[in-house]
Length: 209
Image (cartoon, rainbow, N blue to C red):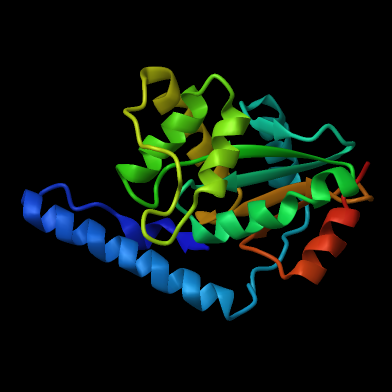
């Protein structure tokens, strides 16, 4: 999972310095992914309150990309270049039909100020956004991260990316992936980070139908 504060761009650097900075960031992403794969995420769910309920309403009105048509609704906020997000989305694939899920993806683009936003734009501006999202994950690799090309976001996409980022901030942490769902008691649960396979299955089964 990635906090936004460690990945702010340096717009005043010369071109060669900016390229070096980007290479450093990509190397950092690779190292962080390696560390993640050897340790369990420690992020804990936050139980519902007024702000969480308000966030749930805002999520319902937002523009998300749906996968599955089950009764259990799970929102996932992700970045196309995020290895943690890639692991989560990959874990979800067989569980979506098995557990009757509808996963609603909201894409943000901030881990790399150019590449992430450009790949998010490719997904949002595609004729079939879900197919583009799944292509990004299928072709994900640790050299270039997200598998789709980066394009220039149009005005509508820039607005959507800002809205999605606002929702991520409203969740309480600027971390991807972030998962939001309602449990069987109707409480909104917000989780920042990933789960091990056992915890993920337990969480998904706890989502209200």
